[in-house]
Image (tube, rainbow, N blue to C red; front, side, top):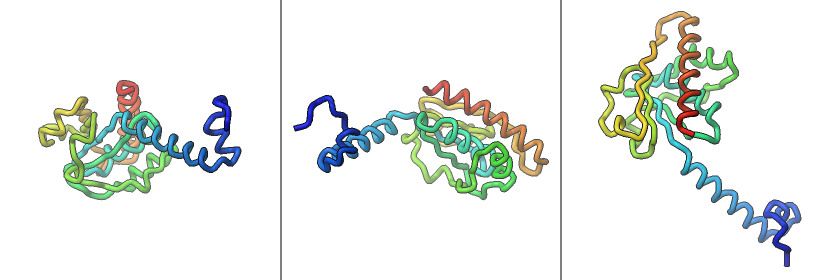
Length: 168
């Protein structure tokens, strides 16, 4: 019999297999509950190729363990390589992110919906009536020089930081 003062971690380290399994299940359940309690955020843009990709990258990095995040577009496209480059310049790797259509997702799975391009007026109503809806109306850097991409990136970061603070 193990005394009550021994933690699950201690049992795991001592090699008690039943206790080890219990510890793993306990931790797994805790993480599932924590993820369920986290606010879920959807960033939406027209093509999910620049602004919403930046927002997803910042939110994943700065909001890790605080919010769950996805991005999508009214239509799917490709992630702009300049977007990947300017995010990489500040240490955020979005090279594995892909462009996804909003139609692949269910609005009821999200607490907050953020439009980055002024496209909120084009969203189906069920997306606009979430607990939090914001339309940031940021400039689209498409076809612009890298300095515009950097300016928009920095604006997106500032907004994402405020959003994370407001949701927690």
